[in-house]
Amino acid sequence: MGDDALCEEQASRRDAIDGKVVELRPFRRRGSDPIRLQIGEHPWRPTSDTRVVEIYEECDPPTAGLIEQDGRLYVFDCIDGRGSKVSFWAYTQVDAIEVSRLQNAAGDDLIRLLDGLFADRPSMAALAFDNLIESSAPINS
Image 1 (cartoon, rainbow, N blue to C red):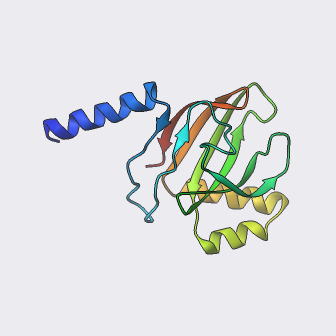
Image 2: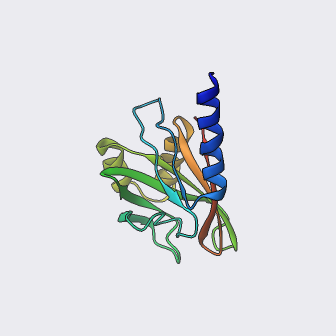
Image 3: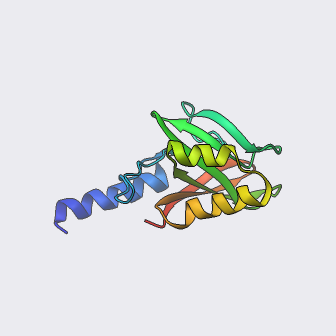
């Protein structure tokens, strides 16, 4: 890795810590594009321009669903801390076939499907405090 690339990588990490919007580098597997997460936003609507498409687990707050950002669809899931002050969330891009499967799943089938989506592809994780994103990091990349 050249000096310019190293500086760029370090600057990117600094932005993830100090910046308001976390921008990720494009994922290389499955043609997945990164989701943007903004510190201080709700995990189920991680930027002001994110559109909630569908909620799969209608809780207060919603804990799993489908969102659209920059013309791409992403599934989100609260993977730990439902109903707690501190919670952990995961996000990954999905295609039309996966969306169809999600829309037709319920109960244990939905849980297995969500687990499978996050298991084999680059994803993003977020830490939330009082239902607001505090930090984030790529996972499975």
